[in-house]
Length: 390
Image (cartoon, rainbow, N blue to C red):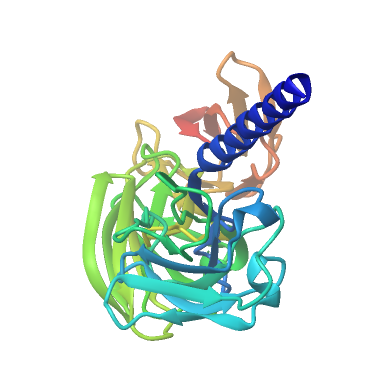
């Protein structure tokens, strides 16, 4: 009899210890409530929505979770809660579906409960979605301004809260119909210190009232420089002159207009025919840079200096040697034989008319490569010599 009593006592003691261990594990395990953020907002898209969900990890039947009342703090300038979602959460089969209350500014309160069945599973308790109102540099760190409450029978004690912020990124998109382009393929400036102009249009298709910067760069400022810049059909903010060959035009768009920029160029070279290029590109100045302009342009800037050289012999009334851009004329006044010879700088004869009986002789030098040439005009025994750069 005594032996049976001792056996029963030992069994009871073991059962009590096991119950105590289970109770202790139930009270200490999974005692963290986490607010998870499931979506990173793309501020460059039209779908600027966020999704968060409070979770307890695995919820078992013995936890006796029947109801919840959770308040989450948020930044009203960045976040606007709009919907409670239950699909795929512990709230999917609640007798009384969770409700969202945002009466208190900056606080979203979500509450729901069951009458008979406890909530069970490894799922979030509930989910909340809304609109992101901030920019790409904003985030909402969220908060728990009030302790989360559950039904009195809930066996777990929540003592730790972890919160994932609502984050935003800017996934910029390159658009080939946004940028700047020139009205023409080239500009020709004739004569040193003469002016030429380049007209360009800024394309901002499907954009409205944006701020932007158009950059114009001359590749070789030994050929031409930027003299002045003017802007129409936009609000000018600033014309930033980086150097004599580069300017940046900062402006804001007027509604949906296409701004026009006029660049006046000045030739600074005495070379007969030389060219450079002017590059143009656009940058959209919003904080996120959602649009990358893909439309750029480059045009030729051609500077010409048609040179005319007039030389004569010692006898001013004997001959005239006229050297134009692509031709040479030798005029003899006293009926002498006439000839024109062209030599390279090292003395090689590269073009000639031969001796002609006419008083006036012409020679084309259109086919000669660029370089320095010595030109000799003959009128009988008289010579006229000049040096030409081609």
